[in-house]
Image 1 (spheres, rainbow, N blue to C red):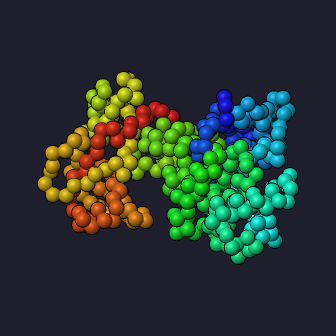
Image 2: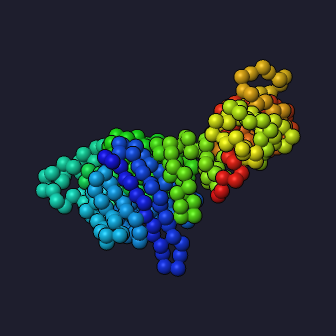
Image 3: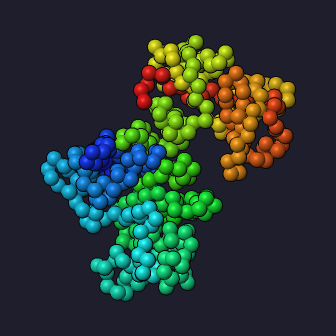
Length: 366
């Protein structure tokens, strides 16, 4: 393996739960891997073990051809020798040091001129010109985030590890900085592992997603694939699939017919065992198309007569609850809702393409 992290380890807290990682791998390029899951899932513990701030009780952690931790041999490389850039929650800036002194803190091996040049490079890259002499409390949350990122990047780390990098920000700032943070990380070209429990952060920042639940890795893969095709009911709940309904397979094959609430739903069956009969039907709200008025001829294999039950604003989007004989949710822009002049009690057609219906065997475990 060249580049990237390969880790299989466990960490137990005295009298507490065991955090166990089985074969966690990150790409060796500049991809961003998101550790995602609810609070208490073990994400920060995993990140701190990768950083060398915690010592695993069992297993190994490697980066490329380097061994960072091997519990069986009693071998452990501390954080300062791993060549990582670490950004903790709340950014960890020194309150008594200016922006430039915070950024230069980890550059003690350089001579003065080289250190000043590196800090100037970070200040220019992050758009912090004119703020070099300010203390952290004189900066906005977004500016503090950039200073912390600059300090981590200044030492040219092999990998960046960020713990809830947007968690300390208010909601409007958080929304604005999601795209900015991804762009900055892509520009620096260093692989990153990012901890978050926020679905929007995970979708905006990640290339690869590692879903954690109850101290275990529940699923790993490309972000869109994991969000669209969760491997189990618990993962579907964690990634917040809006519609999850129990169903029974009526006809199997390349196309599977599933009975749900007196309706038949068509899905692709390539990943489903021929013997599977009981399933959960998963449909993401953004994959539901609404049509008002007379029924239309269209390509989606699933068309449901539905009644609008209610609306939930979600920023620029609106989550719409529908009654199709079962509860179905759709996600539309505010503009689309206005164009359809939707209101509670309206009758609509809900269209869903077969490839956008994901089936989970009901015996697939947690």
